[in-house]
Image 1 (cartoon, rainbow, N blue to C red):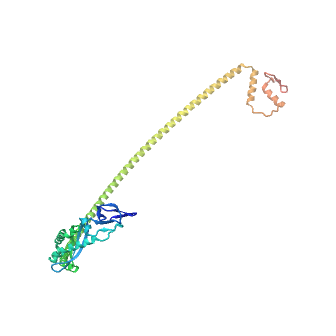
Image 2 (image 1 turned 60 degrees about the horizontal axis):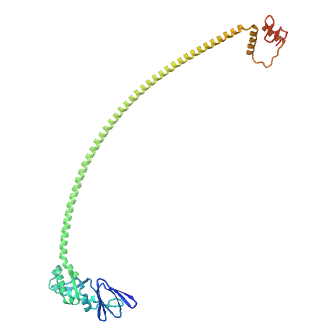
Image 3 (image 1 turned 90 degrees about the horizontal axis):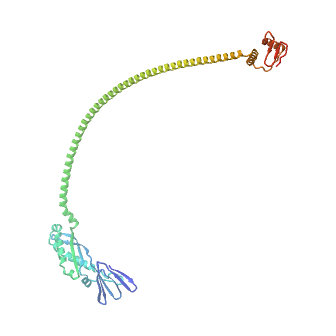
Length: 383
């Protein structure tokens, strides 16, 4: 169907590649062909639109065979409009110029004509053959329909060409079809029963084989279990022997390690004792040498001090020998005073002073010093 668009008082038609369009204005053809697109005035234009694509027409009709059996024929006819100008002249393909819709249904007329033309040769052929042949030979029916439609002049008069004709199925009534299927169904059932019996026999044979296989498997499993038990025993004995050998080797190794350790400990103790004894000996020798050296050094020191003291005493005596007696007495008093304890307070009585002077002066009773003269037990002291 073409598209018609309105623009004020004009119309625009746009066709398709599968539709043939013709435009008449004032009784004359202005445009025609497929894929047309043009402007026109709807008041003066006459439009025709013819589809030129291939169309399928399914057919389903009843027929009677030579043995008076009713059958149903299902066929399909493919046709197209080969001469659209002739078809537009013979059939009403006009469309409304205002809306673009078809005013009639010319394709229904073509379909009715094709159905009647296809049924006639099929009915003639099926009426001459029995039911069994009609159901099993479909090719003659197809050839007869194709030949009849291909040479029909009425189709050429309206510009229609048949592309192909196919017979899809030829089937009897349901009851008759079931009756015809009964021998085949029974034969198939017999074959199915045979297959069932054969399957059952095969299943029994397979079950027997399975039972034998299970028995053989049990025997083999028992034999392997016995071998496994024997192998376990042998493995246990071997493991015990290996464990005993390992324990024996471990005991020998332990004894050897203990012996080596004891020997090493004894040797270490002996070495330590020897080193300790040597150390003590060296310490004793060192101590003896130290004491001897210290004794020698002390003796040498004492000797040197004694010699120095003797030399100092000798020098002192030599010096004293050269001094006058008065000086010696003064030094003696000074020496004596240095050896007396400290005196915080001194009380001199006449008796004490007389006794001291008597000891110092001797029989003369007079002590003469460098600064004065001490006289008698009751005399005076001059400084």
